[in-house]
Image 1: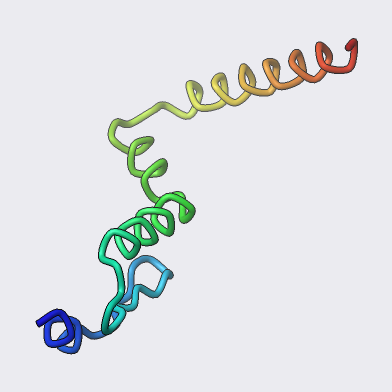
Image 2 (image 1 turned 180 degrees about the vertical axis):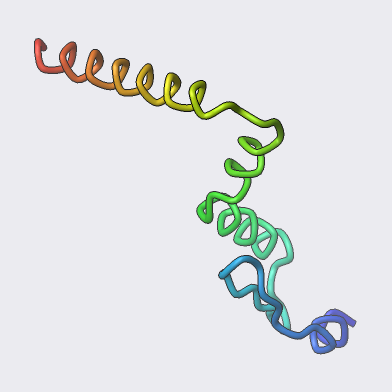
Length: 81
């Protein structure tokens, strides 16, 4: 039964990542886990969340500057130890 289901599937494309349906006794949980890992590593989910609302360019610049300040602060703290 499982072989028949997977034989009908063809490879598809997902934002530059090839997703291939495996045949035979492949574990479906492992396939789902692998798919989720590929989507997470592609960074598309983060980009989607960022684009849910419009941010003014000045706000984006301010966020980048604040993020850089935090990063420098943490580096300074780590150098002291």
